[in-house]
Image (cartoon, rainbow, N blue to C red; front, top):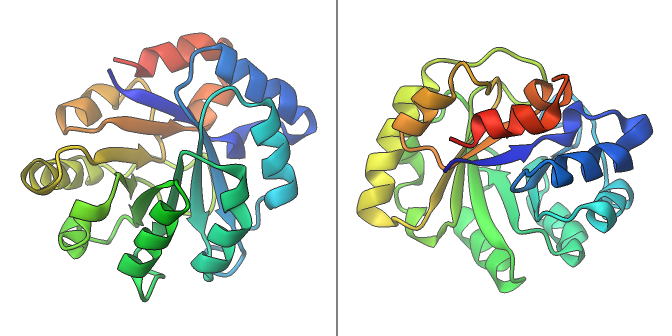
Length: 214
């Protein structure tokens, strides 16, 4: 069954605790948190104070996605919150293997993110050390974007490589995910999906989550 990580980027920040508690009670598998610094992507989101509040009310593990320039700084900042995953962009990190080792040494599962234009082969020599690879199916920075169809083929290529090198590594997809493309994602080998607008704008969030857990 595909695991679902609702992205709180699409939540109501005026009622954030209620929204986080609702998706946890509705059966999500992770709570996805996008951390943006306004440099790597043209947007600013939330820092450790708000994330700490989310961690306090979430009953599901945190899945933190860094969209920042100084990855090590943010890893050190957020590690005390003990998320399940911290993912960083391969396009930004000069020493990815060192950072992977650091994240794991903090008892956090390391993950790498690939932008839509970045081929999965770019991380072949890192794959054995990863617990998850996140494929962006939109350009990072803003929620509510349309799904980029080419990620289906990309996920299939990554799935073949994953099965050969590190079968335990999960494949996650983020951006434009809905019940319209979830079956194609599952066929491509995807294990986890991030969904923001589809879940938080749905009239019944439990129904939305369950429609992706196929």
